[in-house]
Image (tube, rainbow, N blue to C red; front, side, top):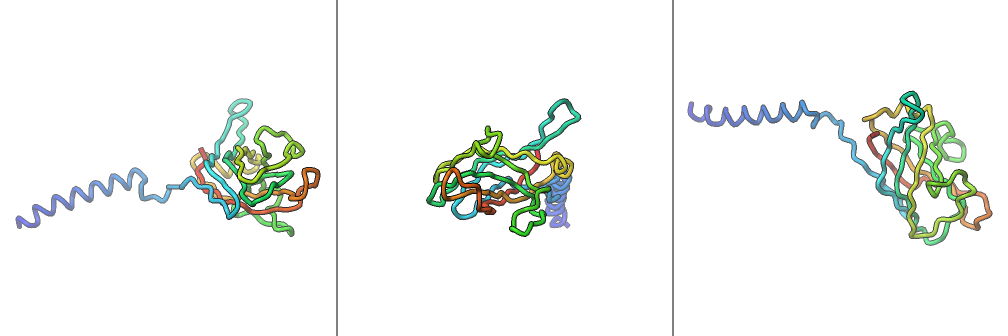
Length: 176
């Protein structure tokens, strides 16, 4: 009987702790790691996906920001960086369909692709990608987002149009 009393209290304490942790959501599977995992030859770090109110509370946009770089051994030109959800359909060229793609420009202050001249190997840049309006509702605050980062670029010169589309990283993040 003494054995049951001693260990019974210990089991009761453990049960109370487990119930408390469960009620706090620790075991609910809601944890989404923040990660930007780049493929070989590329760098990706510090991803943040935020909702931003513009023009009052009625208009919400979302932006994916991260640091991006390339280490392919050569300079790339006319760089356009895009993001798309993992569930996106691909077109015949193997690139995500245009309705799902979030287009970003490098550097983040650029307003059109012609402002992007080159990206030197080993250099990193801050990137801001605006989410299409239709995607904002599906990525509400607190929800998880997982997708891919794509780049379009040319390897020949700063005057050649982007000819290569490559999936360069995987992003997993919670919308804040």
